[in-house]
Each structure stands twice: as structure tokens, then as C-alpha cells.
Image (cartoon, rainbow, N blue to C red; front, side, top):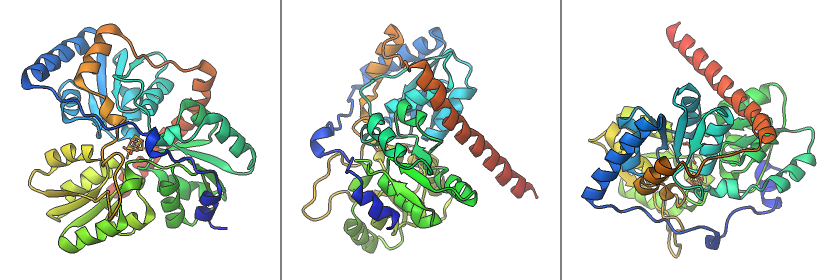
Length: 360
Ligand code: 13P
Ligand code: SF4
């Protein structure tokens, strides 16, 4: 049985549209934006706090993070930055697993989030009890989980991965002859399985944003723009990935827009990433990959409803009040730290190897 067939026989853990909140973007007039931005700058300094934001958050939050010595990046790099930052408080603008990862790696720091309801459909689709029972059925398999999971799921894993390093890590494990359980994203898992040929049993979850990209619509858009390069985040379905010129993490997609000679790009990922792409390459033309084919409707419309819960108002509020602190049971935290540290060490070694090869 192929890995993808296995995914289909495993209980469907994708969210139904009714379980997905509407995407509500914060709209502020210029005066309120300026007032809040100034207030947040002062509060960050007063509270010895640093703002770490994901690329899918609003331009205002990203600009504020960049302008105040904070950081904007993908989930792997956000985790790495948190461990290197000396502030006693980290404010994580992103989704809950990103705040939890920061706390797991930095238990001595206070970790705050603008909104603790900022979940992720992959995390929600992988309940720890069910996942543990699933893993227990396959004790001979190494458990690899995506960073987009709860602390309890990470604590049941052997390795945590992000999209930026998934292929390298799975190849590394395969060299050691390991068979894998992969959770929770069936699309990223299917892509990794296709690229590596590794024996992977896939959990059956998906990202509501990326799963909505449509292969047929993309084919039509490519026909209208034959000069465009297609960039795809690997949480997208395989038939969308199959049309990509480049598949990669959010950081890899920004880099591609900046470095590739093409002038026009069709991009299949959350449209929050367009802000950084435009800054990195102001002259390039960016087109959104289609989400609604004939007769289809979009649920999230290419913008994560949970990422959109982060705004200047709730950021200012948590800095004022200290509300929305992340707390994790210490035993779970300690266990979850192991596979995340393994990931960071692996990423570091890999980077050193790449740099060594470049120097040679
Ligand atoms: P990255 O690790 O590529 O930033 O992806 C995180 C994510 O949630 C994408 O939907
Ligand atoms: Fe999760 Fe998808 Fe939102 Fe990323 S875009 S945080 S994978 S729901």
C-alpha cells in the first residue's frame, strides 16, 4: 500500500468549513495606527520584550518587529531566533504552536501572544490522545511531526520538522533505514514521500489555506502568464505542487522572488507573504494562485484566519497587561524540547556542511 493510500484509510482529520473561523483582518485608521505603533515601541522597551512575527502576519506587525530589533521569518527561524534573543519576554505574533515552541525552548522567558485563539488547522487536526494511540500501534516507526502541532504531540515524537528542512531530515533518517510516521499534514507528507521514496505512514490532516489551491485554476493562470514562475508552499496538494518551478518554505519562496531572474511569479501560499516579497523585490509582479476553481468556494481565501487574529490592538493590550502568557506543563515541555532541539541541531549541522561545501 502506498503512503498516500495509507493516508486515505486513516481517519480524516481535516477541519470542516464550519470549524474554520472567518478571516477578519484588523483595519485601523492612520491616526490609530501611529498611536498604537508608538505605544507598542515604548512598551517593548519598558517590558524588555522582543517581537517575533511570522511572515503571514500583517505588514504593520512585520514592520514593527523589524524596526524594533525583533524578527520576521518562517517557523524554523522564529524558533531559532527565540533561543538567541536576550530579552526576558518574547511576544510571538503568529499561531499558537509558534508561541508554544518559543516557551518550550526558553522556559525562563515569559512568552506572550496577541491572541491565544490563534490556532492552526494542522494542530487542531491532530489531538494528542488520538495521535498517541495511533503511534502506539506502530512501535517500530520513528515519529516525525511537523512544527504545526501542540506541545503534547511534539512530546510524543522523535523528531520535529518544518517545511524548510523536511526533505533533508527524512533523507537522513532513511539513510539510517528508519520507517516513519508522519503527522499531521498529508500533503506535505505526500510530497516528502514522493521526493524521497521513504516508507511513511501519513496522518490525515491538512492546512485549510494551502489545501484550497486548485490545480485546474493554476493551469489556466499559467496559460495566461506563460512567462511566470510558479512558487508553491509544500502544504499544497500534490497536483498543485506538480506545476511548481520551486517548492519551498516561506523563507525559500521570498528568496526565490528576490534571486530568480524571472520577472513574474504565481505564488501558492498565504498572501501575507506578499508583503515581504514586495519589499525584497519591488519591481517583480506577484500573482496569487487561484483558490476557487469552477463551482468551488474558498474558506480562508488564501489568508490564514488564525494568523489574522494578530493585530496592533491586541499586541498593545498584552504588553500592557501581561495577559495571554503561554504556560506548558513542565514534564510535557521537557519531553517536547528534545525533538525540537534535535531539529535545531540538525539544521545547524546542515548549514555548516553547506557553508563548508561553498568554501571548498
Ligand atoms: P513555514 O515554516 O514555511 O513558515 O510554514 C509555516 C506555516 O504555518 C505555513 O502555513
Ligand atoms: Fe496552520 Fe495553514 Fe495557518 Fe499555516 S496557514 S498556520 S498551516 S492553518
